[in-house]
Amino acid sequence: MSKRHNEHISLSDALKDFVETNNLQKGLDKIEVRDSWIKLMGKGVNSYTTAIQLQRDTLYVQLSSSVLREELSYGKEKIINMLNEDLGKEVIKKLILR
Image (cartoon, rainbow, N blue to C red):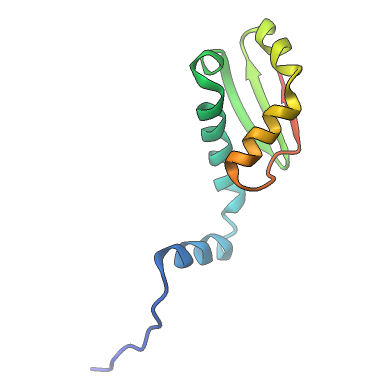
């Protein structure tokens, strides 16, 4: 029986290689953005959030309250900065509230 001569790499490096090889980063970003929105915006905003969708570098958030939509529209840049900081990279460049 032959011996295997595998080099030892860490699990995190193996996962990074797997994500890069299979072009999965965009899908992971979509999930991470949704999780960050839920974490950062709190229960009040999340109770009115009906859909969160990331397309390219634009985040589309559908809200069931027009008053909340108007209120959040004043702080779009701050929301984008908070989300990108939480993600650790610039994923979102534009926020559209529907």
